[in-house]
Image (cartoon, rainbow, N blue to C red; front, side, top):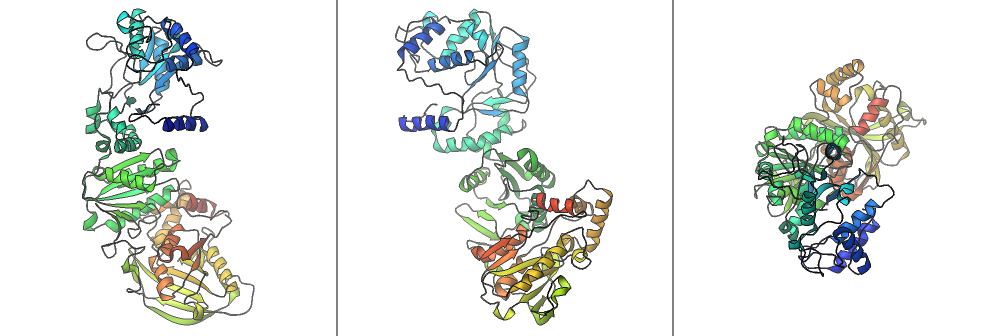
Length: 614
């Protein structure tokens, strides 16, 4: 551990305590120079000198490394051909193969190899070598290299040349690697370098680590570099260089467009939900001048399942979006919201770019997106094309109401599985057909306790999408009819309740014909999921929207607070946008059956339905 600015011993000891407390290492070697007997012993054993020094004349430490090597060599588990990987903690590694195995094989093939330096960026195809172009032996790479400890120990004590021996107070002038290089040549051994093509390391220069901004960016840019493609201009400039050449901001910059949309992926984003969001964005942005040739960033914020859903999501994004306008970034650590914003802004070369950030749900909603303008964060409404900084855009308010016809509608509870014989008095609301999300939809609602609905609190509510096969024919391929019946039974027991029924949502907006056609595909190709089947019939996975339903509850019925009975988080997002903390959600678990078990599991894993299979 080294501090690159002024020395702060409190910060230093705190860092040591944290390393020990969090068990980041099995053994921490601390050499404070106070144990003179230990230092005399290590200097005599390694260098053949009687001295209590722990650092060279120029201030380079060496005793702690030698003590650490002694500790490893004497450990009961150590075997003669074991290797030590010595590296600085701040290096950046790009690794796309079993580099440990490849490096170990080099020592197996050549018994004269003492060290093998982890490769630096190169074009590839360079054979293993121990001499540079001028015929000079390669120096031991102190920042990142493999070391054959038994072969190193066979050379002890290391001979210190006269030019490196300053006085009895100091054993050596410079760093320990100079002594090691001299003795490797003296014993006809080798320090090798080579090229593994797909793997390499980079060392951030000290000036990067002394700058607060650069130091923070290094945590992010290391992930960018580890995923860098060999054809990028910055990568070509890095070939043959150990030290990082360009400042970290240059590595992050990849988008140049005046409008950039960033999709934020986290560990809770399932594959199906992400594809829904991509589909929704492509549909909404089609023909919009604002989004013509806009930049796209897919930002994986520390997903814990990178090899699973996250990898599929990023791969799906590559197929959907134009490669010339797409950047993909995967952070191996979960960043806070300000750091996510800073990283995404740093990825944009154009300082005047307008950046939209959206956390992926089943629908891309710019009303809920954060907009990073050059000076402050605002939201953008795609419906009216304005920026706003309130919780919701004024265009979604009561100034644009939906007109309803209203009538009383008595209902017999037994008709939907009730056990009573009395008639339940409800009020029926019906709108004309209108456009929402590219669909012609109609809102119908059954309201119990209509005369008390205005200002009512904790009202039980369900927003239900049309499903002819489930709601009317009682199909067992889905759970729609069962969910609707369960809620109507609940509504019968409550004083006030609302069932909102949206016509036009059949088959998630695909329509009845395409829904049945997708069923037909699943009947013959059981390995496919329902999202794939919808795609095969030329339909998007889900184009439904629920903003109009939420506005009906808020502005037509004037409900104060509600409990939404739904497993669909997209419905809850629409409600939460208008009701905030006055809206809550309660899941509706379903027991899978013979005909719908696979479909229900897909609703959870691919569509993000929460609480469905409790």
